[in-house]
Length: 342
Length: 253
Image (tube, one colour):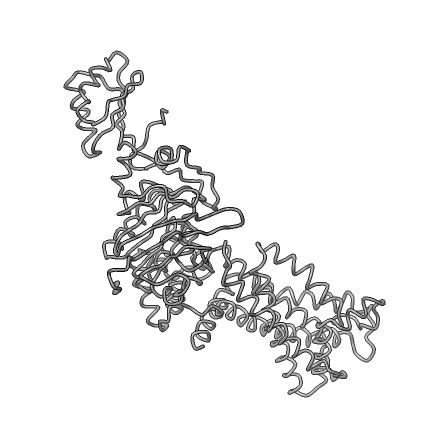
């Protein structure tokens, strides 16, 4: 558990710049994360998320600006800092030819533990991440989700007070994603500070206390998930009426659910609701009382595209740069979205 | 310093544990060298004149030196793979010695080289090779080989971190190391080469190492070859170890 003086934030970044040739991967980023907080760094591929994580994890030296973790400067105090951080990434950095247990034991020993000690810690982590059955199998036989869990386990070997999770679920199937989310939520509940990068708003929404939106190496918005959603106009209920129904009756019925005017587009009625909870049931009740026939009804959640459209005026670019980035487009598998109308 | 030693051993252990699980690597250090020995002994051997020695005696020290040089490619390919798979990122984020990943790599090459040297010597003896010197000299020869192999692995560690893909690592092998080992005294007497090539072969460090091996195993005149070989090895390490470590510190995808 963190023993640092509480006056230094867990993560503090000031005016950070990192150039690769002509490209400014980081173009003056300021960022702060408090102890025990999960800071979600949200942005498309190439926004600078990974570069920032690499600077904070002492893998990359910035060109200017400063960055410190637990009060330790990433350049001056790099050696000391490495004992206090864990890094897990989208590339699942485990040795394919070693077993799960061998991987974790190796990492533990490299942190300075004795073999027996490292092995015991490895076994405990495998148990926790439900990998005990696969402990003695080379990790090349693991599924993508299992590898990510092992990668995350490797980051936790030394019980670091600060974790960097670089797109931990990118490229995973929905079920593996959910199970990894549960694991991360557990960790966070224990008080670990985490910087989580993601392309998915729903992921940041679920896991992060604070969300910072980054694009082209610049921070373009910062706030809690609710604050960001407010800037997006919250969540929208979209109701497709029966052909013979009168949209104006529906507008009157639903009007008091929203602070904003209800939009009508043919037989499609759009309502920015104040809260997602119970909105669908409430809308159905009101429409049925008003005698309006409903053909279809869905909650349209803000997506990364919406954030980008509203914050930058351009759509998020999903062109994949990594090996496994392109497969997931940021939709929420729990609440299927209607086709984008706009 | 203690950290460097323990971390190096941990990484070397990791490299060796995974060896039997990656059959293609194991074939590289076992089957392939045997194949080359047999090809040279029986296909080319009859056509090559080696005054004073049976060709099999002439060949074995030479081909073992070449094979030891190629042993270091496990380091180049392994590091290259570790970079592309993100493992180097993991290692660099750990509070471990900055030189240990490279040290562990080059050290595990010593073990695999010892294995392939043993295999080649056994093969050699089966097809007619024999030591013409004392046991101590022969053992010194094996020691010199392992030392040279270790040094050369540092050159290949640098290459492995410098180039972008395993294919490029292989290109370096074919474009640089193949000619270097062939234009030497490894397979034919240097005197048989045309002008230009001969002068190059005479100063080629591989000629010096091979001549040192022939001195220690066959009793051929030593000249300065044994000391020359040791000096060359230290020069290679002195130049390429710092370069490789510097590269390791900033390597990234």
